[in-house]
Image 1 (cartoon, each protein chain N blue to C red):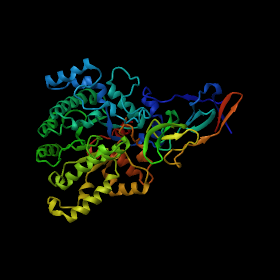
Image 2: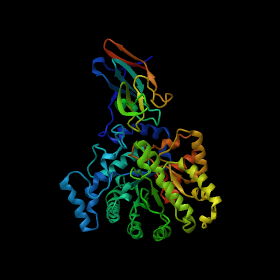
Image 3: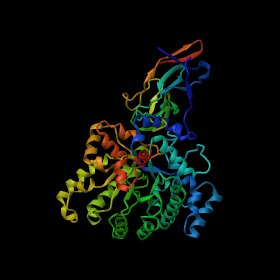
Image 4: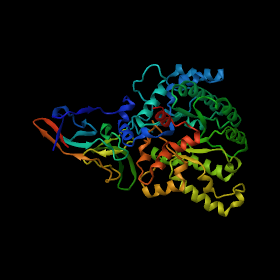
Length: 402
Length: 121
């Protein structure tokens, strides 16, 4: 007999270190301890902490309304999430997607502890977190509730989670359905520890070019804070309702929302009006970009009178903006390489894990790409984000100290 | 060639498995229809711990003679192991992904000697 050890099956109770043991192996193989790795899109499971979040609802009436659900069962009061339609874990096949039940240490906020475990196993130095269920808050029927929850979530995140770990960062939530509430939200939270910018959750039906939003964009540009558009799914949109499988709806709607917002952003000349405002398009993957660059250039050149603010082709504005890597479509290598070249990935692409969600990407999905140089890999994995968000290279600082 | 002891034959229930590790080498040994199948615990997608995932029958779609769909059902013959990282499914007998036969797990021979199950590495 030779010495072996038994490995247990993995489920919702499994520790992050066990679930991601192979990511530790890859981290060591690829020597992620030698350079900065920044994850620009990971997630908190705010639904699991809803009682804490709703403690911060500013309105006494809406806080009371939210808390009243405790006596009625398990529903998270005021949330428009539909738990019965959360098929992301493939009906139990992907156990880490969703709220984990692993045992956590005392003395540290549980969400911060979970995020830190993921960072340590994947070799990530900074992790930027977004909400999960709130990604579809933009289609809540009550805009005033979006404002209340946005304020509460941003307060919970900055005071309870980001304070707990210096490696955790936030692109905070903007209640975009109420334009006049957005600039004040920026002013309220911009100086908080760990805040590196703000987010519009893209699943909503608002024209990003509406005059009502120009004040918001001005404030962000003045403050030097980037704006992210974070995609999400929608099964209620009339077009998406034709799709009978989650796979189909997820594949299309996660891109569809940002297709519309980015098109409006460029064609209405917002890059010309706000040249210093950095914009990031999050979690739509990358394959949509060559399509949009080609399509918009083709139509714009024939209809320039409809986009009079543009001084360059749409594709040139597109390649000035930033994109997160996940979910990276990796099944057609030549197309993928062409996409990287088209979007100027070397300077514009930002690594994202999307942990703990079902289609997450480890840092090795970038590092193992054969067509990238070592410097390009390091740019995408951390250098581009460090430059964009002015992040301190903690790996270099640690090495210098030693 | 080295043989790694996995367990006693009677410790394996039908449609069950054991996963063993020796250093970086990890192998899952499965019992399906009375036979043993051994696969490296390394998903061909992103290297996830496939053998530690859920064991579940393949989902089939029933199509009538008129090409209409009559809904989904679990296969009686094709049992899959599902990578817990991203849901890649592999037929436990063939080690192949149902959607692309070229996507497959690395196999290892299994020996059963006097009630002891070994994998040959």
